[in-house]
Length: 129
Image 1: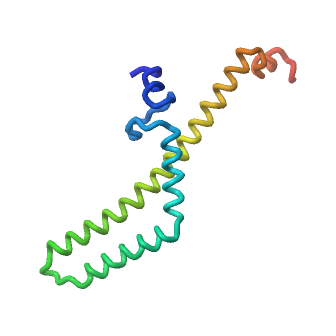
Image 2: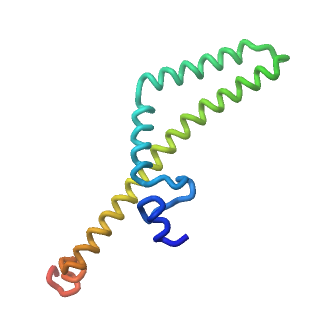
């Protein structure tokens, strides 16, 4: 896929494989929402309660209750995976924000260069030495 195709697909030249074709602006927005949720006391309390209840349920099982113990283990793994996934969304949003900012800076620089206001030309001409 060419760079032009990437831009038409998600609105930017940046299209990592794990973004599932989601535009950078949406990645940033979802990451902001995930950060808010991860920092919300109600989420943290409910997540901790779910973990504690699952651990208590697991601890109250008998060793011979293998299927029940395994199901509770998988539940603990899933609870952890949700929090990890949301933290990953926050990190990816930060990366996307940085990418967007670089793209905007480059676009502004290119525009100014085309208009004759580019600092590169002025520096090369010795005007700012």
